[in-house]
Image (cartoon, rainbow, N blue to C red):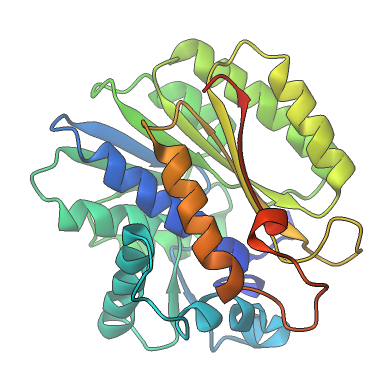
Length: 291
């Protein structure tokens, strides 16, 4: 695997993914029952936007840096919670830090100490695991050097019975990765049909994404929701046109919250020199299966 998330940390896709993760965690904590959260691709947990990799791409300028300039007065609650988390992370670590998904899970657990939330993160790549374990070992989340395909099957269903599995792989080979991930989701769903699964995916090859959606519809999985935001139209060849999150078994009314979040984020993350995209054309929250 030659993908390094350090080049992309804090970009628009990270911002969208992490705010939707915050929304999922907030809603799952509304029930006074314990639940389990797994980040199947933990990465290194914390990233420096002053690093050579981040400065080389400059992607955070159109992501977290753009969002922090937006007017938060009418922002959805999850967006405000996310900005509060960024503020806390930068106070705790460094003003140029950007926290990854395992940190957001641990941060939620710290904010809800009596909520009965148990969190874990897997990372298969040794160097990334070492960084993840070093940076987050004091936080309330278990860190494991483990492959997601083997690890998810081994830990579900969890003892809590309720839970969320976040899957955000690097996508080195889109068509092949999409097929493998559908297999992983189907196998996991068959073992634990009550679980909530959130799969992040890139939108850069619309044909691959459409085929991915068609294959998902043919599975036995019920209640499949897609949440997408584009910063470029699909017919323009750029590195990343948009970002998507597939949520299986989302909490009640998550679709409405996701729609509100994406419509708020769209103008904040809009690319200045890109063809004009309205909130209606740039955001897409719809049910693939069920409702």
